[in-house]
Length: 124
Image (cartoon, rainbow, N blue to C red; front, side, top):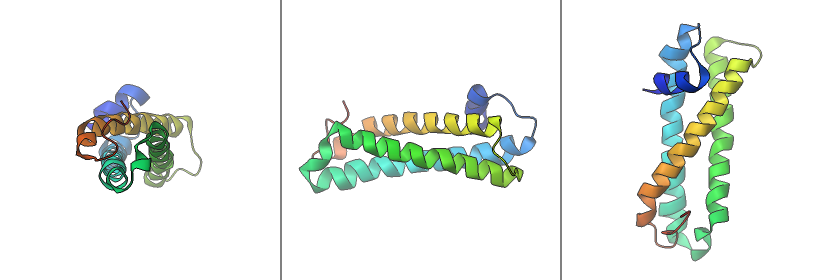
């Protein structure tokens, strides 16, 4: 599933390690990170104090997730391919990973926000 999604945005890479190791690993962990960030925002912070229900806090959480997703993809791709430098494909892959992290977080926000006490209406 993740290989298909990444290849739609990044294109197919000639190195088979992307399809067999990098895409599934990074895709799965990006999905897990998005779930964890949504749970932290809605179930922990959203139930703790009424100050964590602002759109600005939600956006900061999303930006934090994206700043984790981009270097995570770069580090994993460079490590698996043993590349010494970051090439254009790795950069494109990291940007696609950031986009998927964004979409995952929005989807999980819509699913989890009802369980929050103070952030039920964040972001929409």
